[in-house]
Image 1: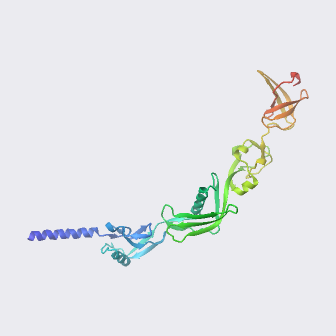
Image 2: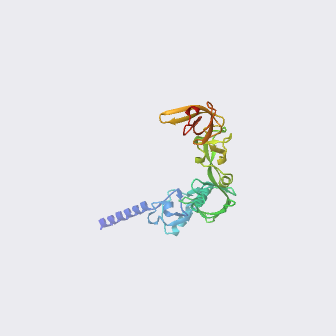
Image 3: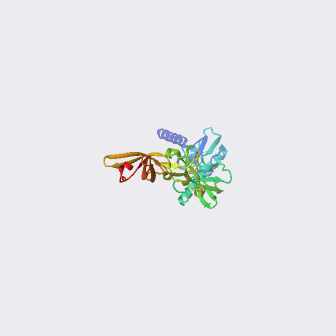
Length: 315
């Protein structure tokens, strides 16, 4: 009988020890992401009650102190009668946040314009809000802000937009203007008239689409290898009228006239009577015979005639 009583006492003591070890332990500091603080957030070893809600969490990006008495009351309300306070008098509860700022809202607008086909490849949207945007602390989720409605008037560029911010019940309504921007070619340096443009002479910079359409601008393939018509300054927007096909031969320039016949090549000095681009026909004065011949511009300072005159000596 004595042995049985001793064994029962040992079992009871062991059971009490396990219960003590299994009691939830209060944390001195809690960091949450959702709208509520659960038992699992507030206590270590919360067990099966880990998902039970205790308090509403503070607003995203803020923190608050919860006194021990309030924790005891909230815990008792859901059936958690016993826990280890571990000497904690107040628990600091912080709520994580993601900052929603002007840049992130602008990106949402650009994505919407792209989905509608308004913003196409190479274009950008320059968004200007009517009022300054103060950064907002939203819930720390994958999509802290959502654009629920955008009204855009291409004629004026005006827009109104409504956003929902995660963790904030009231929608955010904003207005402003949007300039659609398109890359356009500009001169990279001051260049004199007659310069043959290379790709290094041209830099692409965004300009408002309306301005580009009203003034006209050239594409790269309309510019590279072409000749500037006049002296031009750095940063100038290049238009088709600013360039012309590069001239190999200038008016009154002294040139070499070539005639090829099989392995034979005849040359004679001449003077161009007009300017000519590569492959263009040009009238040239033969300085030896004083005759005018028709030739084709083939290289800087060089022209070629396709067929020889009847008297080669008069070429």
